[in-house]
Amino acid sequence: MKPMRWSLFPAAAVVVAFWATHVAAEPTRIAVSDVDFDHPHDLVLSPDGRFLYVADLGNDAVKVLDPKTLKTLGVIGEGDLDSPHDVAFDEAGRLLVADSGNDAVVVYKVNGVDSERLATWKGEMFSPEGVAPAGAGRVFVTDTGGGGVLRFEDGRAALRRENGGAGGDYNRPHDVLVDRQGRVLVVDSGNARIQILDQDLTLIRSLAGSPYDFNEPKYLAVDEEDNLYVADEYNNQVKILDPDYRIIAVIGSGERGRGPGQLNKPEGVETRDGLIWISDTYNDRILLYRRTPPR
Image 1 (cartoon, rainbow, N blue to C red):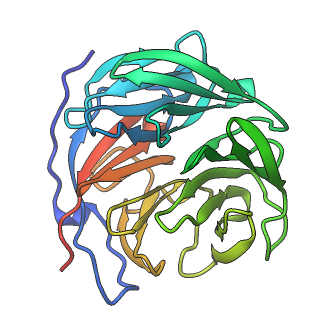
Image 2: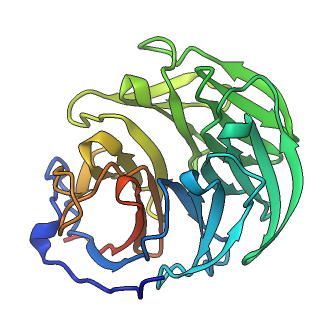
């Protein structure tokens, strides 16, 4: 395993968009993981913030990292999972894994690098790639292969929608996130849009076209100020939107690569306490950024 390298990059490394009147300062890249991943996808911090869990798709496992150094501490689900895409914690502190290759959601009890498999949820889904708890036993899942979105209640599928509202049916829906207002955000990757729904999966609003210009958006995160982070894969960027869904900052120049200001088809993003973690998927690494206060 190679030693972890800390890197600081100038402001030019990050492109900032000026669509909003309240403009965010450029996030700064401060750490890069060891390169021992194989197409890492979404990632999530533990509730106590001590561990970072990464769905390491190509290695059929969930890697456990130190969130500050990005050093790998352990592995969960090795020999158990198949092409996991998404990870999320529910209100009980259980880790939910979108076990895409097994057409299931797997529920683990975790304590750092230790884990115990508690349950497996199946039902009317093919290659689920997104999972999001909503509280009170309710969990939303994207049925990516089947072109739908499911609402699970106490581990059982209770509601399914294949039509995304205005603009028609879902096309490879990828991630799903429940925000602080209880709205359900579905990343409809094949249609290059994000659909904002109520919990009955009825459309409230669609984020599509200009100025977003998404190109295969993948996973989402939301911070303490209700800013939305979008891993915009084929644009080689992570876009940051304010609570009114105006773009306030962009991480990544848009040029595909490994150098300063470059990402290579990023798919996962997580944020907490002014820090941003990105799965730089086709560079097989995890990046850590610090977000500076707005100017």
